[in-house]
Length: 160
Image (cartoon, rainbow, N blue to C red; front, side):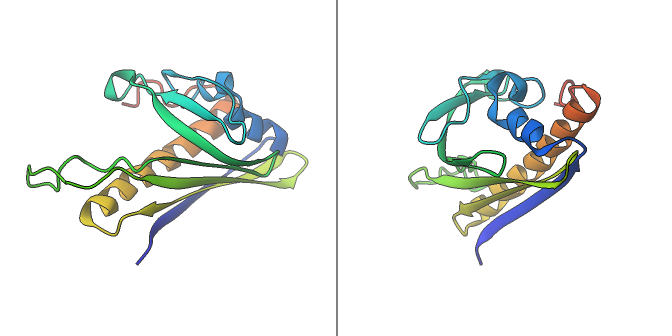
């Protein structure tokens, strides 16, 4: 069984505005990357994302694989599996990446469907748990994106 998921939400804004809120590091930091984003999500680049509300804001790499303006942002990043299998014993496997695809679909002149899918975890208990955590995180990000664009508020602030 392949470990993967997809979350989605509709944002009441034009597709270009929604796409830019993810692509643009200043806007992304206004509702998601609380510790900042080092640059725009340009294809072939590696940008650093930081979350001040987790892991002491330690930045980590996001490897941008594909960008189609107003349609798609795809990147890879560390799978984020726990360091042990729940029994306190270290997992002796090499780190690996998962793939995230963000699809933007115009539903009209002022409405956009955002779909975020992630895949690529190892089919282990640790991979399953990591996928659950990221599924929750991406749904939270989608809700924060919606609140930021539609109402100008940072829904993430104070959430963690």
